[in-house]
Image 1 (spheres, rainbow, N blue to C red):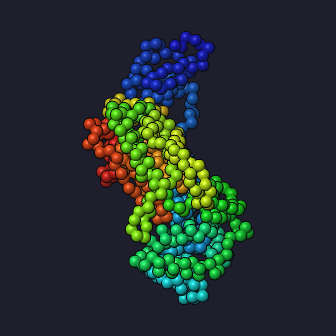
Image 2: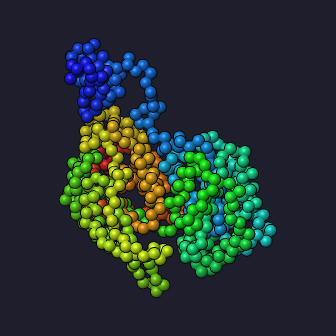
Image 3: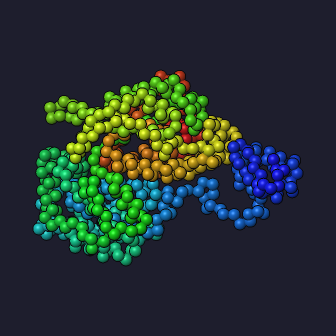
Length: 547
């Protein structure tokens, strides 16, 4: 309705798209020509406001603002465009204080969520290449001049590779992972890289808790090549002697040495003279890290009514099969997730109840999947012996766990998208990671909104059951399993299955538990058309659909 000339624009709704047409153009078009333009666009796959603006209002905006990536423009935070300065992070600390774990988490976080090239230069790896893995504690005695010369050579070799890496073009982060236990050593490092032009920041990890220290040694250090095949008690004694050799000459960081963060048992943090976007991002991330063992349980919602119909997105309820899965998930949560199993010396198992968390999205199908999980009040003790009252599996609905929003394709089947929006269908096939649904989201957008959740996951110490969606779990899974972002959209996250992830210093252990076999369901709605599957044939982890 364009009769009111006082209006600045005419608004036309076509397939849920709102188009604004300058009113001064309307009189120049006959009703028939307007209808023909709209009809032509309605049958096109490019039904959006930009196409109509080009047809009817180009003269009104002769020099439009165009995004380099077009409609699939990637958020700057996700492609590393916000950071402007390269950064060298120098790890500091005695052995078994979690330095390598912290360095690897930082590297993974920057690579995955910010697309910033980051690489670790672990001096221990260089030392093993130079002299072999199994060296006695005496090899690390500073009074052992011959061994000291070899260890220094390993340090210098790692430093040379770090320097070459940092001299490459573009913003990047290099992490120099070693004890770096003396002021002279740290001064030498700063002098060696000062001409690169990168910022330098120290991260000192200090472990004052004897229990955590021994746990770090047993679970991490004794599993390295240095102690492969060695009796655990003998290896423990040797490693403690090695650590004491470093402790003889250890010098903590001081303010005059520059920017740093000191991490005391990953509970207390001291920050000194840290400036800039990237260093501040790293500091914030570090303050959410810890080195304790933890587990995450990823579960898609039970089969939804839209799953049965083959529709994507929406906010439908569960089907009868979905409700049955919800009951089984509740049983699994209360009998398995809520208990920690430890093996005693006599070969028996001891089960101890532990505090647990429950996260869902804000959509009905995830909340209904968690509906049968009970939330009793329990008393637990933290690792500092503080006693607390805890609501077991207290449900927390988080909007950043919502499924990828399909925009105008929400509620459509893949066949319908292929039939009515073939160009959109083809664009998704071509680049599933960056493809953005019309008026919707891309996997890149989801990575951006999941970045704060990564901090929360790193911080959490209790087991977490996350009842979410296929697209969301693909991102979380890829992050912890060390996959490239390009691989994330093709990860298999099947219905009726719980994926247990147990991150550790050198990777992540995965276990899949099927709670409801596909044979028990007459039809699960998960047979995505072959034509809508990605083109690469070398990926064998594909699973249809939701996104």
